[in-house]
Image 1 (tube, helix red, strand yellow):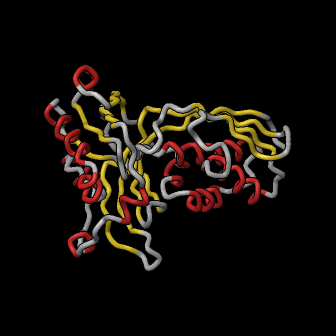
Image 2 (cartoon, rainbow, N blue to C red):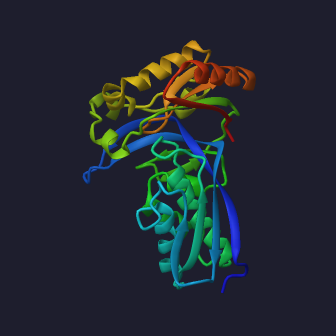
Image 3 (cartoon, rainbow, N blue to C red):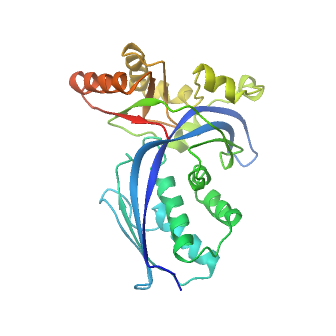
Length: 280
């Protein structure tokens, strides 16, 4: 039996401060080295257990409320692994945009795993939770960590905590999303990528950010390249697409500079949403 019945967790978004593709496995999955960074933009995930049989999700109508939702699959996987009859109600309040490369679905799923483990008095070890999260999605193991940043290798599921400086970012969201699967399928792996000896710290310290998925995405969606240039012209020290897109973010030297950039974008650009957030 659960030792309490309800819990509410904040599920943060992430950006990828770099994403380098280093190879491809025989099963078609790409091998990457990426730096995940949590940011102060959150969904709220509420869990209630012990009521009616089954798993139910209350969420915005544009989200799947069944097995197509990663949070649903996380609850199902947890209950199966722990040998618990599923009696789980999930409520999701969204602030992280979907399809923007910010990891909202993965963060929600990891919040469900953490929350259920807490409600049921930790029947599953950290190692077991990591395995469950990796089976749900490549970003999920990172969100299980309490740390704000980590290097992800393999397919992204092998995570190692790293310290990063706090920064102000401006997120710019165009009025379209990008399919992660499409972006990886259309990436052209060359020997240049496979020969990379990657120094994560050097990239981080010099703000020489790199996202290999920009290669296919910018060809199909030139608007993303225009947004990068716009952020740089507004004073960003660096600008890059997050993950597979479509969100683009720029690093600014201060909160004031970031908020001024947001004001100018919102005043002069149609079809774009922008906000200033701090890294965690």
